[in-house]
Image (cartoon, rainbow, N blue to C red; front, top):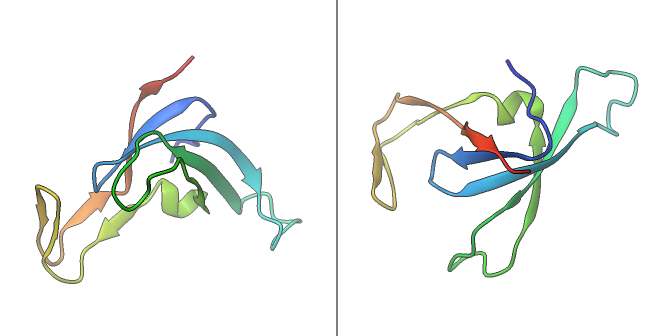
Length: 95
């Protein structure tokens, strides 16, 4: 698992683009440096998110995979039950 770096741009499996702001320690586990949090913001505006939003996720979840429990449709994307997709895909770096 490669750790995201601030300035990297990722695409979420649903299609949105997100910019990594920081990778930080988790205050719930201050002594455990392996439990990191990725802080990122959306770089698009949409119907459900008209303003730029800042999000956070565990490093493990950010770099991990999503397995669908049932058939799902997101915009023009269809996922089948049992399908496993990378949650975020690196697009490049913004300088």
